[in-house]
Length: 440
View 1 (cartoon, rainbow, N blue to C red):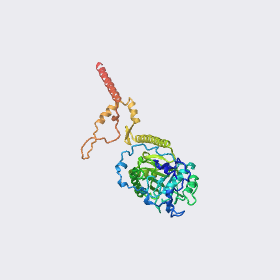
View 2 (cartoon, rainbow, N blue to C red):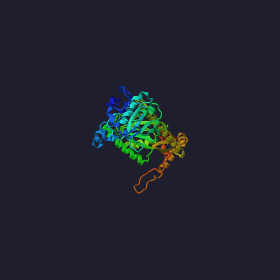
View 3 (spheres, helix red, strand yellow):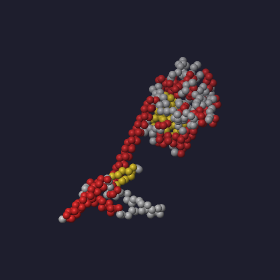
View 4 (tube, rainbow, N blue to C red):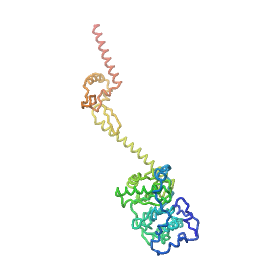
């Protein structure tokens, strides 16, 4: 008997199990294969225990301690060497099945023979996907009994709901009622999810880069969430392969944006050092961290690129507007300072820039030829004034006492010519008069 999920065993991305492009089979897509028949003994219908047994025969044990971090960690040669934006395939809904932990996940847990619940759920989704109104992805996340993410719990985004304790006996009904008909699963009731949900790929048995990078990012998130008092507001969980091994650390953040719309943003090349920025900018402010952004649930690859370009354009225009506004405020402030100064030319310094203002009274004087003759006399008197010196004990030297320049600091060449012309005219008149008296 063929299994549609096993037929996809060599695919690179297990999320594409839901595309529905599998060989047809006359048997039910959720039927248990002959090799799994012995797993039916023991538990009765309605019991969840049979869905999570056989921990010792998973064959997916993974120990990151034996992996060279320089080859697969954040120092690997290909780290941050390729573009990120537009690397998320279009989909509309993300289903997470809480199931065991990364240490026991086999490389392809959705197709593993002994992991009955994820295998049957993936097969049912693949078979019913053509009848779904929304393109759906399936990912496995860590499950611990007695916690908020117990084994068998199903989280659905962007619906922001959780169903408790799904078993392999209920898979067909659950997929039909909830994911195909968009209704409710009658044996259970959906619980609303609140806050932010972060999933980090830690699927080390699938790809060593994820197994090395993911756990350290998870650890940093847990530390930051606790230190910032975000428990109950931000949930962090390891998850199985989401696509794009080379972008590890890979993660997805689900939550409501400023418009109260649930979004799912993908990030890649995430290091532990980036965690504070993601919490401050994405979680607190609702702003995208673009240099780590891969894409978004609900957008095509091309739309992801256009969206980022639009953000860059808006950000650039905002910076230009801010610069113009700051420049205008600087000029206005300088004008107020200059206007408040009496006499002379006032210079003000704002934000490191100097702006000088002309004194209209002085300008009028300089343009009036009748008073030009008095400038030379005043300049001689001013030059005899003592220069103030700094006697601070560290040395003696001249310094300006007043920040407002005197009138002769604004003396220009034209003023000198005018003064000299008046003086020469006066001397000429005096000489002519003297000659006239001698002749008489």
